[in-house]
Length: 212
Image 1 (cartoon, helix red, strand yellow):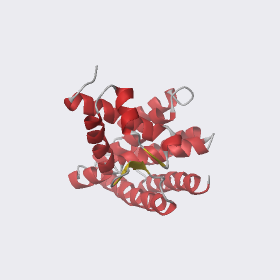
Image 2: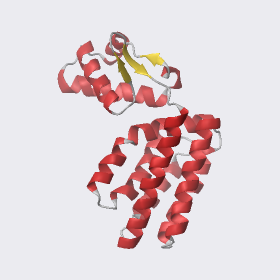
Image 3: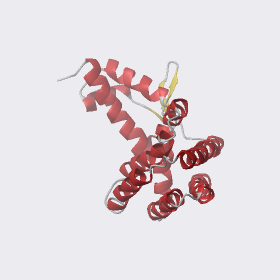
Image 4: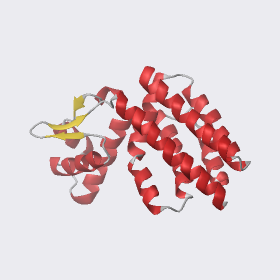
């Protein structure tokens, strides 16, 4: 039975988002709308609506007369993404420390969730938690504009994080160590240490993505 309406669109969206974020084989290819519709059990209309949602997250490019293309992330964008995150996250650390709102307990809880799946969880699940870890710091600033801006980067954050895990067998353990350093800096009230830990974390991820 084929579903229609929002439920069909949402199912198609979840399927497509999971595929784009988790399957490296789709990078550099066009999405086959009919194949997705058949797999999910919907018509092509909700698939197209789902692709519009993915395009808004910058996960696919809509090419006229061709369809939705899953473009590889160019090196320049990787560098710019890490720079942008560094600026935002370091400012957030400074702001939260000054206001006494650093979400140390919540970030520690997410870090423990990451530890619990470091061996058994899939790459996407691990990086979704990674994204949540960082978003907690941004959310604690209370700056609604910054929160929305950072949230707009989230899908790219997850995509690049999954790629980094696939390129480095030791990356999961490194992420745990780097996240712990961020938490330690925030917990001790040492803003400089927290910022340095954030920048080291982003720099390491960037180098893996750029150079393997």
